[in-house]
Image (cartoon, rainbow, N blue to C red; front, side, top):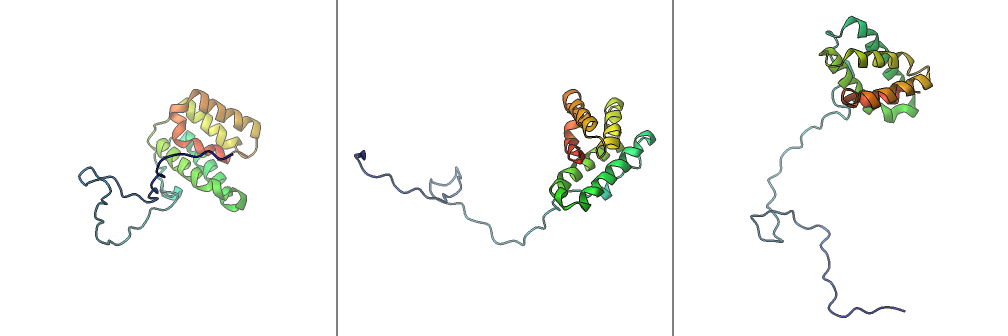
Length: 152
């Protein structure tokens, strides 16, 4: 059984309508600007990890820099971890920048230091640390949350 609909058929829909411009009548496209040379895009990862200054990081948190850098370099070695590299690098750039400007409270730094020590060797403890950072310190942690990908 096929139901018939009375009346004229709907007009075809333009799959590429012109952009909306309130100063032009409906259906009239805005004139396109003249050709200009393409602008080079920023690298996919943003600021490279190697260019972030850590010269002002408190000495007690310096091992964290080394541990996270080593764990990040291990991602580069394993092809299965290649898709994690960009978000982890962004997270580490944010973390190192905040450490360098002393923007992270000591209790959060303690958790981050411990995570840097166990992220590759103790899955249960590293999961617990990530849970604490997420539950109790989200405002500080959210800027560099993708360090969780260093967890094995």
